Picture (cartoon, rainbow, N blue to C red):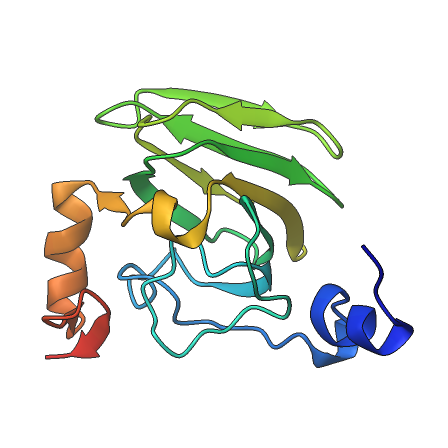
Length: 173
């Protein structure tokens, strides 16, 4: 197998200045306390916004994202059909889990949390600066399926005017 420099540049390299942040990637995006920017590097993965495109597309058996989380913000309770791994790159991260977020752990910079398949979990940035988290989700785009949200999250999201269309992607009510 051989690739030219041009082919590699076009299909296998994500140049940071060309990777766009997406703020409204999930149903929870308008709920206060759960704003963040998602930078999709490889594969679409579990995205709920049809307009989000990864920098590196193609047949990969995993997805890679950078998540920029503002102070006090994070992700609400949800689960995935495949594995997910978190590495906080520049500060602490609180990960909570359980049907009612009854458990939590604080990760330090460069710690790694391998989230079990199907675990209802969320996370927060406890720092006074934007936290960057490296995230890997297992599986191809076809394998990862949709996110399962805690029922309370769906109720709160409905109040913000954001819902799912018939195609399973985000839309305004």
